[in-house]
Length: 216
Ligand code: AP5
Image (cartoon, rainbow, N blue to C red; front, side, top):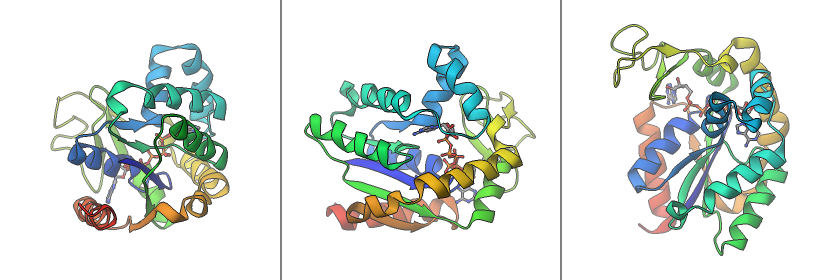
């Protein structure tokens, strides 16, 4: 199964895509995480992407498409994968379909998490991430047991540069302008899910809908 997650920033794509990948025992691919890795390594792509990401803009299509094509061609992806953060526009969606066709594969399902703007913005602004293991927390909805420390590895939590209110609003605007209409592009493979429920309920709904859809 190749499953794409679609939704606004803060809709819970990363959280749910990772949970589903664990459930299916399949690779979890996140373009946001891959780009943040490049920034951390100060690679050529990372140096280029850093300022763009801090502004809440999209990294150029060619760079992201090449990065994804390389990743999905790797051996661990042969039986499928779950992808979060890609595609972000119709150009990227067409490139993904083309890359899959060349590998004799296709995107099977697209999980679309629906959520009101104010909820998405509140979730992003309250997100905290572990500096070490990248575990995700929310100051209100899923706070760590000890203030500002990761439950899993005891390292410090931080707020992503692009999770400041002003940048979150910009990212949401870009989502409306460039990404949201992918719902139409993928309508034949789309599964719409209410993203406003608690994390576990959403996960269960996704698994139920996918089982129905694929007869598992
Ligand atoms: P990326 O990292 O992909 O960010 P995003 O798409 O904006 O998504 P987020 O990570 O903000 O939100 P999410 O929906 O994954 O929510 P999450 O599960 O984390 O991209 C960052 C940047 O990289 C982009 O702006 C761009 O510059 C660049 N980029 C990436 N991909 C690109 C591409 N393809 N092309 C070009 N540029 C690209 O949850 C958010 C918070 O809410 C967390 O705190 C979580 O704990 C909490 N939460 C989650 N679910 C629930 C729930 N049900 N109830 C309560 N709280 C919840």
